Image 1 (tube, rainbow, N blue to C red):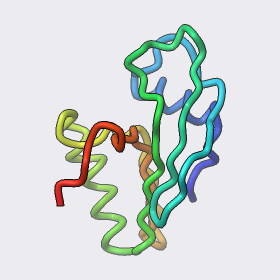
Image 2: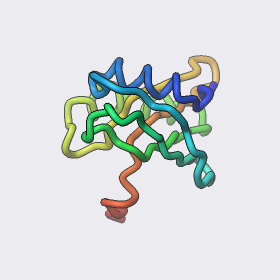
Image 3: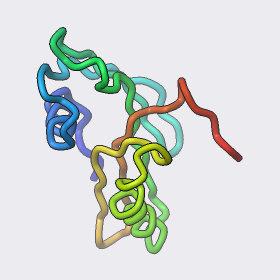
Image 4: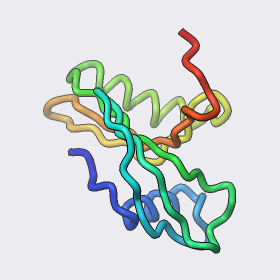
Length: 116
């Protein structure tokens, strides 16, 4: 269910979300993989806008229903309208059968800490 983390996939998601108006992602560098998170870095072409994030993560929820459905609903219906309070979410996938889901988000690890 998790998409292949390729430069084409990331370029498409950034364009679809209006962040990548010029340039492209030329490579994806894998990073840390932990339970529920896959971190990676994007290498961008020189003409990529400076506001395009360079670090990302795929967050997964394998807890099934109702957890995945609730979390995916939060990121698609609520967080999208709270750009300064929730991480930039570029893609959400929900398996309707199992309730498992994933989120492609900007990685805020370098600039934020957990509140709890």
